[in-house]
Length: 154
Image 1 (cartoon, one colour):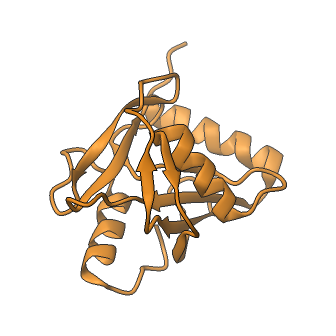
Image 2 (image 1 turned 30 degrees about the vertical axis):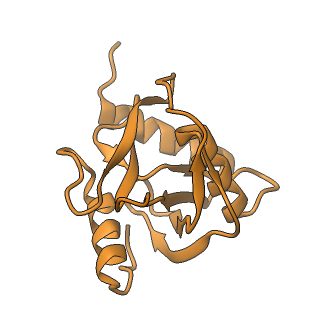
């Protein structure tokens, strides 16, 4: 049986619900000195997204984002992250929430090689991300660039 991406996404969230109940994820904005934002394309989701993932047992949301920047982008953050907002993400489940952070300072340790989770990644103009960038990512980038109040829903 072959599952399409939407079916895989639903299975992922059902598995998370079975083990976690309410889910908390993180996403992060890392802008380089040229105003480009780091985005990833996952192997299991379509489109381009801000890096991020689930908060694991025993870690804070900020610790999770630091870990995700390193895992998904070979990005080492420097100093505290800035919390931009907490969003309800009903695209996956009615119990999913996402904390959005910005990395004011960071170092790219090396280019991120594709792996089982990340098919492709890179820095793109924040005002002109690649075609296929997710709706939520586009909205968060617009809010960040224009200094708008964050929406309540991802």
